[in-house]
Length: 354
Picture 1: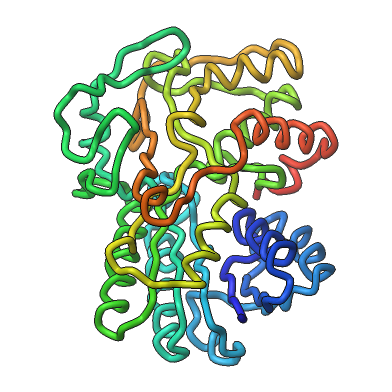
Picture 2: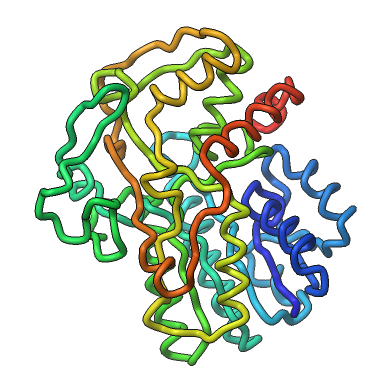
């Protein structure tokens, strides 16, 4: 089995590559990356040491894909992951769409040429912001808790399911990923190709790059450890907003099982997340950090930002039912792993922030 990982020198791509080398040593792992992100060189050296074949290229450039050796499966992990991308002044809307949509189109064309399988790593941000904001929540202690008896299609006691509304507005980021999902499904049907789409909650773990859009849990722990300024933004500035947390390596049991087959179209689109059992608010995360590192003040900005929602937890029941998948790494273990990395890498935020 030969597997190509795009965006392999990012946090998720490198985590998956390491896991594949350790757990499936007979598989050949190839990686494509443009090495533009700060921190990519660190992962590049480590992956080469593990025997991963790396290619310098950009998914936005079709000619960069032409000389890649044919593979049996592609895992698409190359993307701009920020929900504010295209509107925050750091990335243009065109750049965002070129990364997240045009890049996917080019990789899908490569899949069609190779007649191979394809896994698209997508996001919980494909769900409608208005519908998410309409989920009624109550402040209970340090977190928001939804009223599960509210009749909202695709929402239940365990969170947001795959049937939840994906109608715009989603954010430009969410729309780029949703459009990629739709095209991937069309390629699967039009050309009879195996395709899986994994809608991930917040992915986290040691080695995540030092930007807030790369993952709030890792960024918060590193910043708290280094006594850098932190702020609760929106929802009265109380830090009660809740997200779920999943270690990136916990995607591997599902991805490798799907690669092995069978390829059931009815389970093509799946939520994969830590779920309610691995969800937390920023306020709860701060309390954990205070116990680990000592108290550190957190400022407050009551006004909401565009695209923020008070509560977003994915229900991964379909993945559990069809594939027997569930998270392997507890929330405590994920946070502890990140904290240990923060304690032993004092310059990590600065080295990987750009």
